[in-house]
Length: 378
Image 1 (cartoon, one colour):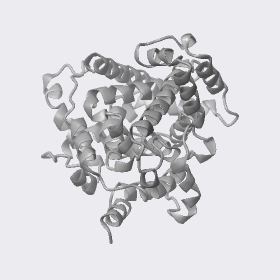
Image 2 (tube, rainbow, N blue to C red):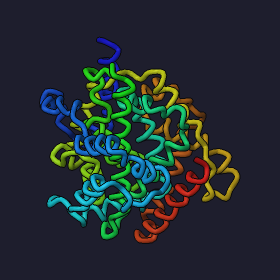
Image 3 (tube, one colour):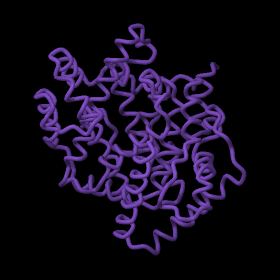
């Protein structure tokens, strides 16, 4: 058995993959999913073509201003505005009630959700080095973990709120990510003409985008569940539907995007079979995240603020499997089950004692407070 086969086997027989499968009960088969192979070489052609046109006719400056200097939407080239208006047209499969339920859970989970996203979803993604290669190629290591966390949190908050009636913030955030994907992909292929497409696929390909969707849905929900955060079946379905919509807005065919945890775990089984072992860059990214400790104004007690490093490490130690922790060289901490155990008890008490609408309001305020802190320190 090769190192890669050993890694794949461990993930699905004893590691996080085993936990996902125990929860989701998927039909795990690589052969049944081989029809997806071609999508490692498929990308957002529509947006790539727009960026190419704008670069050629010298209208790219307004795109750059829109992305990086809070430029105005209406100042964008007509080609980009046409794409935006196309995104505004709601697909016939969109269930606005489910979007609202998914958004309510995303808000209701408050700080617990942010811990899961950071210390499990994002950290766990660094284990799959194929996924991180485009990130490395764009110079992400030089930008630092605080900037990456701010960008991720800003996107997640803007696209995961419950109110679909005011959808422009979601659409604008997805448009920005879509443009950044295309700009990055074209730059990577220009800078690295020998990019190993046969083994890594095209940079920021369709399947890697779906895998990222699984981090915001499958990983997110499983992590909440492991910390005893209670959610209904309708909220679970809502999170998957919310991220199906968001991923569609990013240029992925809706028919390819998992609708539920069973489909998500089947996709993840196939996708992980194509991934390489973590490399040195994976370890650097993971430890950069481990050691990032932006002060949060929500915490008035110095005891909590002074121990955020311990809190993040203990959550990762609790949610990530042993092999991933070892491979990414994430430090273990003493009594690493203590803080997660406190969270589990707290989540049970909140579920029984706090009104649901109050949970939603409080959680939304907590998340936006953290985003503001990161904005000030990025």
